[in-house]
Amino acid sequence: MEPKPNFPDANQIKETDLQHHWHPFTDTATLGKDELRLITHAKGSYIWDSEGNPVLDGMAGLWCVNVGYGRDEIVDAVAAQMRDLPYYNTFFKSTHAPVAALAEKIASTTPGDLNRIFFNTSGSDSNDSMLRTVRTYWESMGKPEKRVIITRKNAYHGSTVAGVSLGGMAGMQAQGGPMVPDIAHIDQPYWYEEGGDMDPAEFGLARAKLLEEEIDRIGEEKVAAFFAEPIQGAGGVIIPPETYWPEINRICKERDILLITDEVICGFGRLGEWFGAIHYGLEPDMMTMAKGLSSGYLPIGALAVSDKIARQIFENAGEYVHGYTYSGHPACCAAALKNIEIIEREGLVDRTRTHTGPLFHDKLQTLADHPMVGEVRSVGLMAAIELVADKSSRKRFDNVGEVGTKCRDKCFENGLIMRAVRDTMVISPPLVITDGEIGELVEKAWKSIDQAWQEIG
Ligand SMILES: Cc1ncc(COP(=O)(O)O)c(C=O)c1O
Image (cartoon, rainbow, N blue to C red; front, side, top):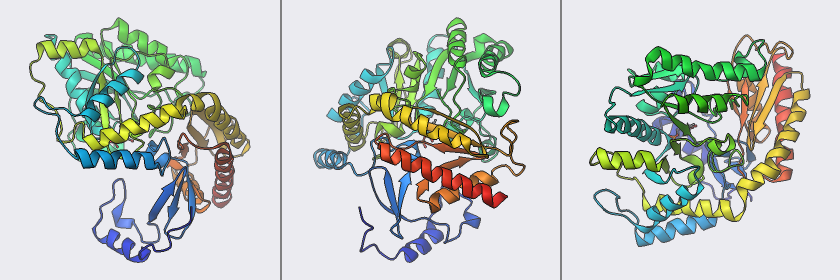
């Protein structure tokens, strides 16, 4: 695909943007026009900027464009739905065809008996719904004091007040508080950063046991749930040691604590299974999802709830006074249905597990030969590259974040999107990435890492 020939004046658009648009997650005071990237169009695994440069999108947007860009089928499905019924709500005993079909479809892909689907518009509000639903469940059981949700430090669960409270990002929690009460955070299973001299298996067990200690500290009668991403994404693609999830699962089962996974990134094939919980052999009591549910074509999120919990709430809590104007929006459901149809038809989940995931893993490992790369890890099509000052001791650079930012900027100059989490580079390309594009991604990553390394001397 070529650059758009009649693209309106890029300079003017940037000026207008800088004057009126408040960007999320941006230091607006220092944002300069030269830094602003104007994205004009996209196809497959590539986006184009206003200078006509193709850029390989190693992040699938924000970890979401699983089926890749330019899917006319999704556009057509949405247009047809918009003509028939552009909007109607799902409150007060109303429904429509796409929301019923999508709920059934999601239920068919989830593990265990997660057959009841509540719709939202994003990952953040799906996590809000999760919080309210967990507490409503225990209230309906006659245990209103069982309301503490245990999550992890450095987890990302969204940007609403509940999302930030559930998440463990200290910088986010420092703005706009106070946070939602009765949420506790335990240490994360980040072996590379925090494992010290322990071997990974031992460290994974130790970090899982923190959950048991926290339950004892708070009192089991007060703890409602443990909530976590199967693999922390925005925290730095933190793949827990193999010992971690089985132990967490055991603790939740033995201690009458709900186990809930945030599948906003890990869901819809990213790890080579429909959900991260399936990859780790878990049957959670609830799961939240968004992003890959529609591959980002339209905003939609969902909370999947087990039959047991849903029945308990339905029979004992009366009307559930919760929902959004756009819960189950018909056009968003149509986009999600077509997206899932594409994932199934093209076998993208299996392809990630059996072909692209292993190829990506092997090619990425070549980066470990670089003097600044301390570790490369991946599951499916989700990966991290640790940049360090000293490989053998896993010592970081003194000015944390400097080399990561430099490497991210070099990537963009070299035609690749890779994101930096402090000095950890994270990658999460569209699931349609080809073998050739995987080779290109790794080549550009090496070049960018090397240039960043040369520059910091
Ligand atoms: C694991 C996880 N949960 C929740 C969210 C929030 O989703 P959204 O940005 O759609 O509100 C994100 C977003 O990156 C996420 O990565």
